[in-house]
Amino acid sequence: MANFHEINFLKRLVRRNKIIADEVVDVGVRAGTPSLYQSFPAAKFFLVDPQKGGESLLEERPQNFEFLNIGLGSVPGKCILNEQGGKSSVLERTPITAGKIIEKYEFEVSTLDNLIGERLHSHNIGLKIDTEGYELEIVKGLNDHCERVSFIIAEVSVRKRFVDSYGFHELVNALWDRGFSFYTVVSPPNSKPFHHDMLFLPISNPMLQ
Image (cartoon, rainbow, N blue to C red; front, side):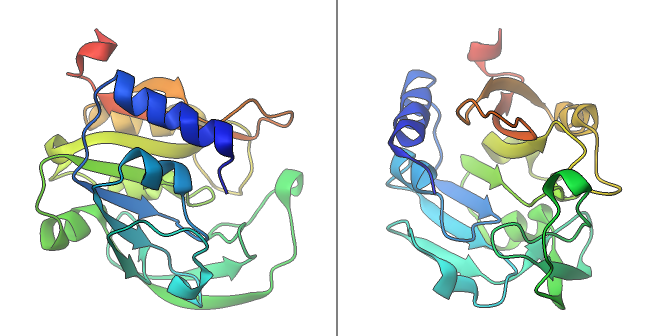
């Protein structure tokens, strides 16, 4: 859960950079993302998480939301989740963040293109992606609606946390190919920097000029 400083930092970023989002997709929501909900209090949220228990796991909720008990990926289909609470992932963990797998189970997978095309109506859409090493596969599922996205916050691995996961440069390049550039790190300093929450903005945004 975000602390007071994280919440205020993101709110200041949003205000200073005049970032607008009428609808926000929170992918990998688990207990909730209060910094996001407080930064965009008037937005409608689509909370996406495939874990068993789904909506009952939420500890923080935005004012206006729909919960989708599915996963997202590069193509529609099915995946197997390694259930590890807040560290659950499709991928196998490397020793640096390894933990006990409670159970494994199948879940339905859609794509960002399908979700946005079928459920969202705004041209000011925000995305938050925190999926324990699966971020690149989710970005690959965004191709048809890139111009409708006003920002992306992604948890980005900077160390090899997962077997057969992406390298840092691969995610940055995939977002660049879709019209987004790195702007700043959102997460606070960490004594074990295995990953960071990073803000990406459309390349056309004046803040990147």
